[in-house]
Length: 166
Image (tube, rainbow, N blue to C red):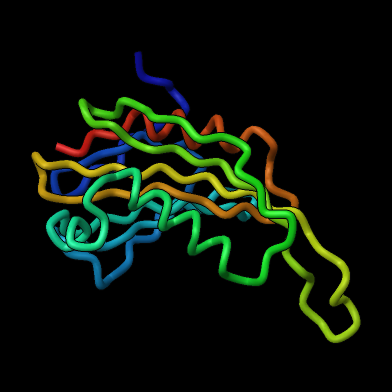
């Protein structure tokens, strides 16, 4: 049953349900083979949907698990985070495919000359999926601001479970 507060975004043969309150920004360089779109929420949070050529991804990541783990490592190494923690990791069944969901918590140093010891807590949610039927990989992710809603992960998972990749 479709949620009446959601609408369908569909392009290049894939689709996802998103909250009606979102503003959608389509990367003008996006093509059928690869690209991304951003769902902007009224509270300034953003959710990204990226896709690319599966064959190219599989050269570096033979499995979706390895691709998801690389995403975690990239975040761990960016911005010099402190107290990096994997809060949750799950394997999901999305549109007949095995997908990897990660919820991470990290404390990032505040920018500025005198605030080097102060940090701000952020949460990251991501879902990685590889689809042989469409010959593409997909990543749905968000890095929340420090004031991001605690239930954003539930919203992301609602959107992920609505995702149709082929």
